[in-house]
Image (cartoon, rainbow, N blue to C red; front, side, top):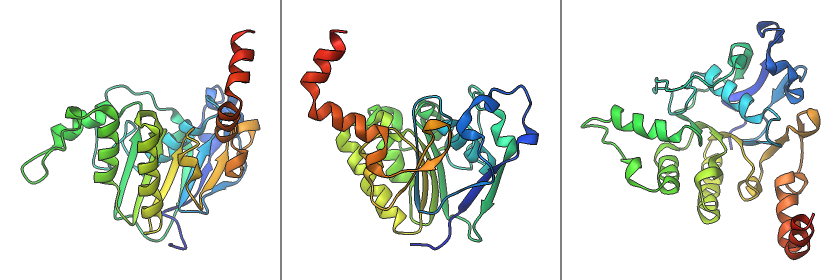
Length: 239
């Protein structure tokens, strides 16, 4: 594996953010110094609203990606939902540039698939993602767009995928990470989070901190439900 990262760390320059911005009310984002990426695969985990997707999106936009996703060649907007955080993001980049890069967002994948058709030409025919199921097209895009020595930012990629397809994506991520690719992924998936040799950064408890796989809430809740399904359902549904 490479001994550097395409993105080595990230710093937030808060003097570039409005004093009245909601971003100042997200505890996990109020970290001091820089947030370090020390593995080829980094996961952002945490409960909804803890800021993981907000930070991932800001990193992507600061790096030069279209806010709705796609490669750095994509330039379109159907709805501006991204925050101002990207204006305050300072990226410390590695000395090498990635040969490939992609920002994949589950919530705006339809728009990216539509734009992929618009960008197609004779030399670059469309993959016609809209002719596949959502999950099939999502995985096909990843398999078509992810290559070694690339940078890939993924926001909840499990949203469109069955557990079996998540395993397929896990294999792709692990394989490419071993071929000089860097992934930064916001995820709730206990399957994807199980990929070996990944850095897991939890946004829970108001402070971004590293944690082990089995310490993640995604793993603990899933394990508890599977092992105690009847008891939990009886207790939850009768309350």
